[in-house]
Amino acid sequence: MKKLKIILIIAIIIFAGIQFIPTERNISNEVPETDFIKMYDPPENVANILQNACYDCHSNNTAYPWYNKVQPVSWFLEGHINEAKEHLNFSEFGQLSDRKKRSRIKSIAGQIKDGEMPLFSYKVLHKEARLDSEAQALVIEYMQNLKI
Ligand code: HEC
Image (cartoon, rainbow, N blue to C red; front, side, top):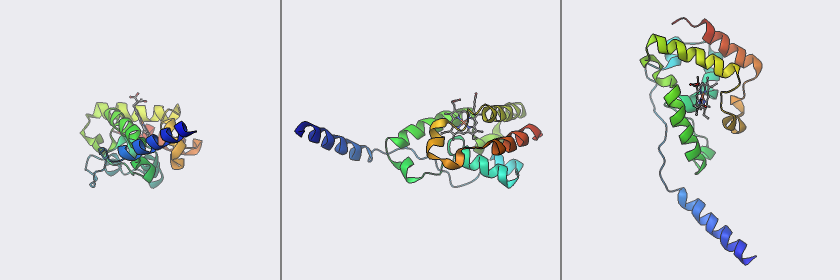
């Protein structure tokens, strides 16, 4: 019993301690000209879905609810953001060549269709990112009809 108490106290100290280790925050206050939504001005319902379900990882601006500021959750998320932005960054979409833009658009529709995106671990905490079939169809149709 005493041992358990000591372990618990050590765990609490470690947990409190890691809160002081600074993490990089993915927050940019400006919306650049190269931002996908700014460039193509999709209908509001499509823009909302992208912002609620994708932008946290795939843009230069993450909305951080309190639990995302708590370590080690924030490290976990940070890793996802860095990896996600390498594949697709909505904030810098306009920097891509037209060929790359088209291939990303195709990939977005495909990922949503297959239920691969948003990531499962994200949907657990973010209810607004759980897309029903109607929301999925809306975004897929928009992407398929987007002319670049
Ligand atoms: C929790 C973070 C997170 C969210 C939210 C998220 N993604 Fe991703 N996404 C990733 C990560 C990490 C990768 C790279 C690894 C992989 O493919 O699983 C990725 C990869 C991708 C790729 C590239 C796939 C490839 O094969 O190159 C596309 C396209 C994509 N995501 C689209 C979306 C769309 C569209 C949404 C919103 C509906 C979304 N993602 C939401 C984390 C996320």
